Length: 318
Picture 1 (tube, rainbow, N blue to C red):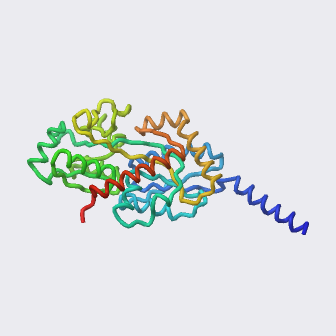
Picture 2 (cartoon, rainbow, N blue to C red):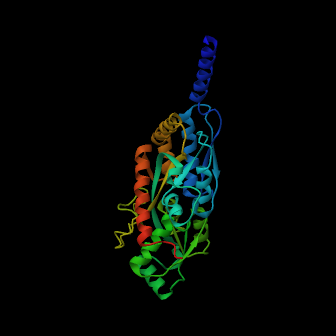
């Protein structure tokens, strides 16, 4: 009996020691959108700093899984083994609206929120050669050409899509929605003249605005983001549209609490790192850190809001 007790203790000690060494192998970070978009840029900018604070042997591999408005990547994350070796970005509102608007293979309860990193206001932008300089120009064109003003988004139920629907309701115009796998695709289509307007986040628009490749009509925030102080808010222009995308890190539900704590601690340190802050500014990332508890509470609040909205004003018509 004594030998058995000693053996059990040794095994338990070995398991504890092994667990304490997390991570022992590469961690996959799923991005549910295409390469080159805002979430992908955030992931690739942040990953080396998470590695830094997880330990010298830590390694993170960014995996792009675009499609279906983020559902493909979100589903893969939700269904991954909850061992801490698969994490990923989850984006509002898509992470919440997809299970509301259609049957999905995940729900909010499928994830363990770890930390929010970015909160990025939406924006409308057009080519400078479009002749559309103001919202008045946009509305006038849309009313004279019902359904001909095409705009791109990252999918049905995305912040880009919901904000355009709200703008349509508010102004009485009719726009034509063209969904894409990610913001990088929306940007390419807009710059190429394949669609007339991009509905995408301001951080993903501002570099082209600064270079003169795009003209931003407005950003959908209460106050101007400090990375785009020259772009007015929709509210300033008389249109009370507030919409954006939170981009945070989550793991599958059921990840051990000590692993979640280690990831949360590493993320907090990574986001606060002065070198990361500099790189984030260079990459136009609209940082807005939330710890696990605050992030979870915010996601639950938003989920209730979108469910209420769906009951009164569904964004998908049968």
